[in-house]
Length: 96
Image (cartoon, rainbow, N blue to C red; front, side, top):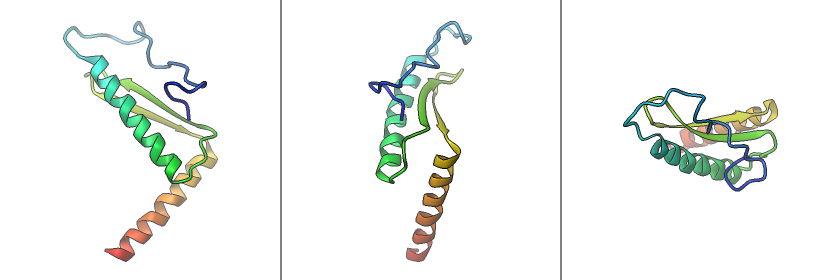
């Protein structure tokens, strides 16, 4: 997975001229929150055994300053995640 500190991290979403910036909105705080959330999601996907090949997580800030995490998956990784969610959901329903 691409993330800060990974060789594949390309810094997309950090172009200050690409978006309209509103005075007083703390975009950096939103981006920091998104960065932490992206790391948590990456760790959870890895713990679930999801192959990181073709998987990208990107932290960004929305127009209102809130954090946004963009998840990009290859078709194979998306199918793998969907299968794992179904298995966990089925197990959860059996326990409930």
